[in-house]
Image 1: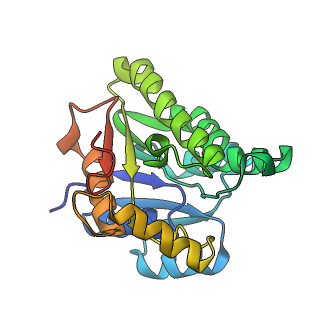
Image 2: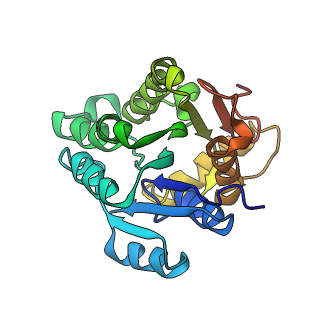
Amino acid sequence: MNRFEGKRILITGATRGVGRAGALRMAAEGGEIIATGRDAAELDRLRQSLPSHATVLHNDAADPAAAEALAMQVAQIGPLDGLWLNAGFACVGEIDAVTSESFDHLMNANLKGPVLQMAALKQHLKSGASVVLTSSTSTYEGAAAASLYTAAKGALVAVARCWASALGPEQIRVNTLVPGPIDTGFRDFMPADFRADFETGVLSRLALPRIGTAEEAAAVAAFLLSDDAAFVTGSQYAVDGGLTMI
């Protein structure tokens, strides 16, 4: 398939996991990819994996100045057919361990960053463009130690619905990808024994009793960013093996 032939797609947080898998898939389907990340080595690795006409940019979504900087770079490249606001990170912690610094660090990357990016990049979206935000099934799980992360990812679901209403008259679609237990290394911050117990507990709750792949989640994002989803907006697409049954 060449669903993205002649289309320019910007993906934030594209150096690892689902974002990287999506960048590779949409490039293989003919898309002109603009990919961002903040790790220099991972950016180089991604650059080597994408076609020569792809653009790979250093950009840290948690930096409040990064959104305007990204918009300036996009202005030099050209308008967007698709925007996937995917950058973010996860963490867990007890309620009484939250500090002002930890709150700001997580919210800047997972919520403030995407919101500022959308504000700065809206003017560069073509009529008929598609926007995808990456949320998480944590929004619905009520995990005891994930309150900050859950709050940020739940807020993305809410703002996506508002953006879908606001941008519908311009034929711009906005949808949310809701990954569940996907094998991306996203939980590598957890201690090994905690991670093993966590994943065993999650597996016991799945209708499809296995961990998903980054490619499987990226395939759904690619659908939402393609013209195949031309009449889909304001929706949430769970890729979670039946964990939440949204």
